Amino acid sequence: MTIPAAEHPLRIAARADRDGLVQRHPEIFHPSPARKIRAGLVIALLIGLFGYGLVVLEFDGARLVSGIGKLGQFLWFMLPPSTDTWAKFFVYLHALAETVAIAFLGTFTAAILALPVGFLVAKNIVPNAVIHFLSRRIVDTIRGVDELIWALIWVSVVGLGPFAGVLALLCSNFGLFSKLFSEAIEAADRKASEGIASSGGSKLHGIRFGILPQVLPIFGSQVLYFFESNTRSATIIGIVGAGGIGLHLAEQIRVLEYQHVSALILMILVTVGIIDQISTRLRFALIGERAAP
Image 1 (cartoon, rainbow, N blue to C red):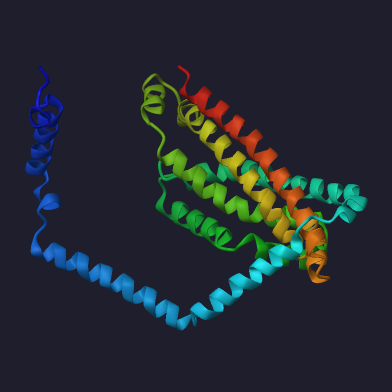
Image 2 (cartoon, rainbow, N blue to C red; image 1 turned 90 degrees about the vertical axis):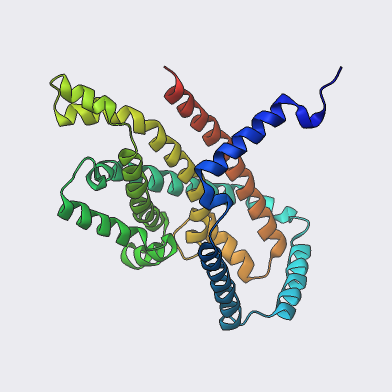
């Protein structure tokens, strides 16, 4: 004999759980009129800001439709990828390897430099309010400048070439890594370092053996992700003269050789896909080591 659906034990348990939640959090299930009014005002404000932004930025649906049509024509001109590109395959392959090298050096050098700064910025490591405030603002200032702006600055300082690209990614990623590393350090479990301190260890021992083993896998995962992302960024900064395949890509776009452009984009996509697969495997390996007892 089957139990009716309305009297099924799982339904009864679910109803009991919901009733318990309603009793514990009545403000969520039965909000007051004032709360409903505030929520409505916030939604209306967001809708108003969205509409105001469309007006100020001169949003035009007809221009958008026309632009999509031109985008389709652009994609049509790119197909099929030009076979003439393969005559310069090794030239483009060298430029692509240069782009990957720029991303690699910029990412990992920034990570190495940001590691001690991350501990300096973390509030639970350096509780001094003045040092914490100044270090945070310095990191925010560096992080607030986009890598393309850094590329323009370094191209003006050291000249054209991949060295400027490495410095641009280094500066941009240094600020990002310093912030991410400090947040991971602040979120680390303090029980291990407290146990080391209670057994006579110094604060440096607590950082080395209590906090660092917890955050290193997180740091590694973040660095691998940024290496993958910076491979694409290195292509963009190459357009402004910071070396790599971006310079060749900009030249082919400038002379309207769209089939050559599609071949170069295909090479970049394959490279990014390979790096993504490798970094994904390494990230899972780091996570597995962290989860292992």
